Length: 306
Image (cartoon, rainbow, N blue to C red; front, top):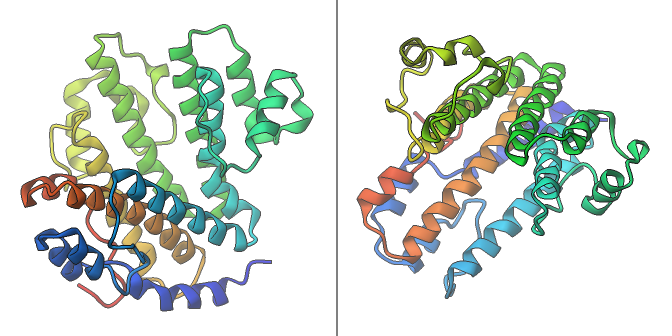
């Protein structure tokens, strides 16, 4: 059984390990990879300074993700674990649809069990929440359409899970849905394809119908997400999404106890791993400060910091 007060207290003591704005400024300004590693001291990242290839960097951060997932599994709450791991199940189904090899080990169901169930039409081996995904996999649609339907189904299921956790989690997923819909919209425009209501996921802050009117969509984006860089495009959308998510997650950070604090902490940990991996790669290749500013995700500062 989840002990919310114990876990919240543990998180309160760990939040100081997040990289704050002061440390991030030093990271941007440092000149060598060794100096970058030294600045990370006291954070969640104990990175070796003798790294000699980008592959070593990717391996280090992949290991950080594994450790984080193991932490989440130890929480012992089935709904929270599903909330965090369901994306890996859907990633693996994408791998099956595209007939690729590089699957994820992290899902709620082991990859080869999933693959066997799909290939043998054995629904008994699948959790109920993946059965719609199975039907998408087995459909006669083109691969491109299957992938779109699968992504939409993932967000539908994630939203359903989030609703059972808290309003905070539900509203977090609403932001995720909005940005997934924006990506769908940009992809359709880039490929000069007709935009239809069914291309978009329900339950976002921005209604699906609004994506059919470019001027209205721009107006709604400016109103709902005042801090994002407009126009959104393929180059900046990922960073703008992370900026909005981090800004929202800080609301969960300031709470002393509760499920929202737990959810925001682990979501912020996922984003910080992504952020520091990007920075490590750019430091390894000695990119300049202007490039850093383009890829940088704002830090999830710990409680008490302005």
